[in-house]
Image 1 (cartoon, rainbow, N blue to C red):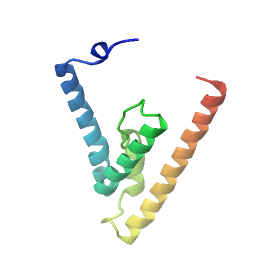
Image 2 (cartoon, one colour):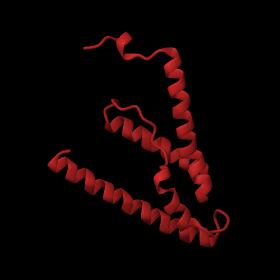
Image 3 (cartoon, rainbow, N blue to C red):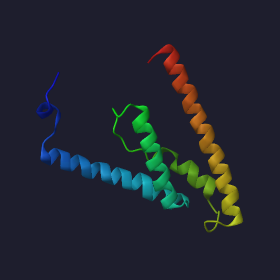
Length: 121
């Protein structure tokens, strides 16, 4: 078993890693919704709620911030392209399509998680 001193990083390394994490979080949680045409405040709240749920589901062992993914940015931009201002009728229709696409992406993740749980890594 390691003691606390062996587990902690130095001040300089911790500071650099915290800035890297801040820029990654900022990009994922602010830039992605702005590029897609979503509301940034809703993204921040849902990312925070998801992070809290994840933190407790992992029994407080994995302190990680969950935010948007740049991997889906092109698909989200394609779905939301030409939707007009936030709240317009066309925007709401395209947002509905985006929500359905994200929902099914989550289902695919659950299927893969189940397969990995059953057969192992």
